[in-house]
Image (cartoon, rainbow, N blue to C red; front, side, top):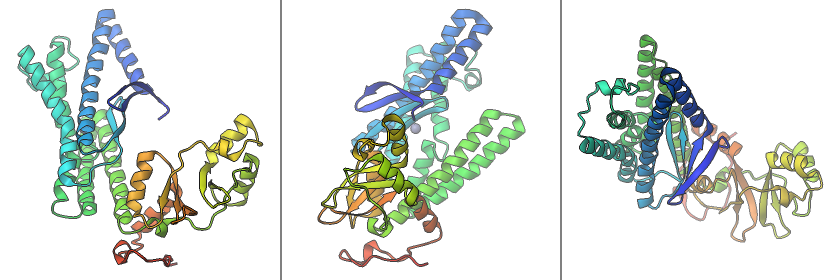
Length: 379
Ligand SMILES: [Zn+2]
């Protein structure tokens, strides 16, 4: 997300604007200027800014509801297609997920009601298709946009809020993984419908939305599949056990040798007591080689967060911690805090493929707390 700039911090959440959003403002400004001069340009940019303020408030609706359940929001990013609130995690309980999902559209309902009450304006659907028309008042159009935001977000497809409500409602009747699959299938079917309607009517935006919804539904199903697998196994079942480590006194040059010699793309830096000091990633290695040369100590080059998780922890809990901390790799430690393995993104990708092939059907987590013999996956 290096294409985003942070514009402020509200209640512990960074508000960021993606640079493409600023391009959108510029484009709107220029288009209105060509049409109707400076006054039209100011009016156009002001209207789009007001729309996106409503979108940010919508995202804060989600963030505030999540906070009520003890879940933080790392940041809210403004994109040309809308807002994106990055919650640390989604609540597991269906009732809580429904509240968090509905809190966003509820904000737009309130904004629309306030605008209609204050300005006493009848909102009819024709205003929706004419949001660009200067004949209709600024606030009437803004009220119409808020109603559109409610309707659009309640479409029962991921990543819209309606998709989450649907999944949560389904998970009262079936397990969460199955509920996600069903909700994702409905989302994909709707995406096909939007795509078809978009192509038939020559509406490019509808086609764009269809592709967006299709990809999001697929991604959501995949990520929930991983979490379902994660609920059945422990970190020690999934971790990399055979790997090379670096000593804290080694240099980036030594690390580069290890990078060539092995297939690893991240190296645990482990001290004399077997404790993990940091992970040196391939990208950090390359960066250090360019910025400060091959003599750079590995500990100085390793700038990422160092996360360790105790062996025996359920994998889904570990993945949640990984997501919350923003780490891309984490170490697995034994009772004496010694590093015995680690889990990387690539490793997780392999797990997902194995999960799809129905690896690990046995219920590892339910099979006893004191299991010490590592399980070997079938060849
Ligand atoms: Zn929302």
